Length: 230
Image: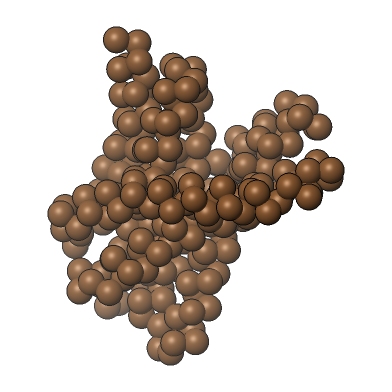
């Protein structure tokens, strides 16, 4: 019963955030079937992520003698770059080419949905190992962070959908990916730095979450304005 409740608590934040951000697109909402597909692909994207993270981690063993550099590498490359890249590929190849992707805001929606599929399964894995407290902490930190970072990436993918050249499209997509990696990597680095800097850096997660949320809300407003002229 305890485990079942913990798993429910692990899944609930992702579902709530999917519904919340899906409702942001109230004029021309995306097909629910496609939303479910992107969510499912977000879940599946954790499989190649794990394999890549294992391989890259094994190559980073030489950095272990430099704790700060090693923590930064683990945070920004092993975790953030690999995971955000997997979500990016889901959006790029399974949502971006679809005719339904006809607004800048759609990029944000698909970015959030793909990330929350990923975060949902990741959360379940962590909760099985850590229980109720882990579920509660991650519900208000890790899961929203995934949504905010990938939602911001999705904004630039959405703008890229209407780019006038391939060069402009690639620049926008790269910018979105790098922003997501920086936000995600900063979050992980603050956690990974506790062994040598103590608990204090973890407190910085709060302003990181608030700032990321406000940035995403701002991009949603901009996306809606841009879409009004289409």
